[in-house]
Image (tube, rainbow over all chains, first blue to last red; front, side, top):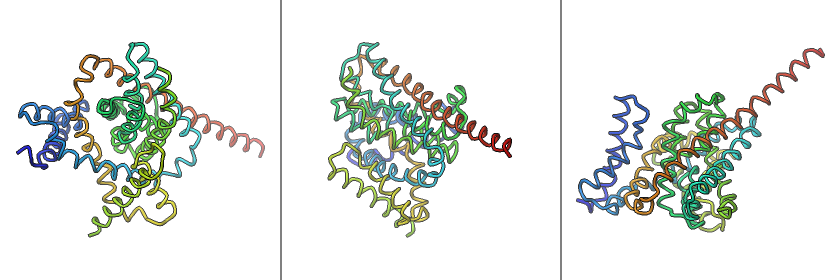
Amino acid sequence: MAESIYLGVMLTLGTYCIGLWIKKISGWTLLNPLLVSIVLSIGFLFATGTSYESYAKGGNIINYLLTPATVCLAVPLYEQIEHLKRNYHAVASGITAGVLGSMTTILGMVLLLGMDHQAYVTLLPKSITTAIGMEVSGELGGNVPVTILVIVITGITGNIFAEKFLRLIKVKEPIAKGIAIGSASHVIGTSKAMEMGQTEGAMSSLAIVTSGGLTVLTASLFALLA
Amino acid sequence: MRYVIQLFIIICFSFAGELLHRVLPFPIPASIYGIILLFSALELRLLKVEHIREVSTTLIISMPVMFVPPAVGLVNSWEDIRHNWHEYLLITFTSTFLVMAIAGWTTQIIIWRRRRNRQKNDGNGKNNA
């Protein structure tokens, strides 16, 4: 049974559907479908003694769609470009502040907690999208699977809490909300931003691309600091 | 048929992105090249959003599912973080909220400041008239 590639596909889609259903009947945002799906999939692997490798054969098929899906973010970006042109300064400053803020925070906390260099570079690209983050981490000598995990947790955190948190800290402008979500929690957060509105979604997509690029450019410098 | 063509177009851009990623020496992932190419094609009117609307929307909406498999990979990397997982988690949470606040506030403050300046200018204009 574990030889079939459909096992991984079925498990991924099935657990995600369960996640969607639980969210619908409970209405509790903490029960994020992605989180539920991950937990149930891991639980299934343990319960049945299936290895990650046989799961990944099918799971990877779904994961391969990530590149085409990310490429499609060009569409909301294109449709909202006028918003961007009109607020160029605000958007550029917001994203730059976010990227530098992210790496400074990680640097500070790593030093404070006395973690080693590998842990530092593993965490450094945590706010950017997986495709870019993996490469930055690998390039700097980080632990790539852990980077992926940290990136996913960051995204889920953003997806679950962004709306409430932004209201709490009084970020009200749709453009600012989008930039905040995309800078802090990349693609997974962006799917929440898309639910919040077109402007939020497009600005969040823009922030993913830009903050990813900016992190590529600056992470190697930051890596020298700890 | 229409959806097949839409998917074909999107896959072409993904492939072109992958190609650039292999050929060019920069540490920029294929998907970012793909975004830049697709965006340019739309801007240059080589392609209309209508040509890829349904499939691109579906792919974007389905994106969270695509993160499940790499996250399940935790079962393999658990050993690496078993001893200090709580530190990783603490940093992850803290920096996510901090970045959201920093990026959101910075953007909003500048938007508000520009809006206020514009209103002030408009006001002056009226007074002069």
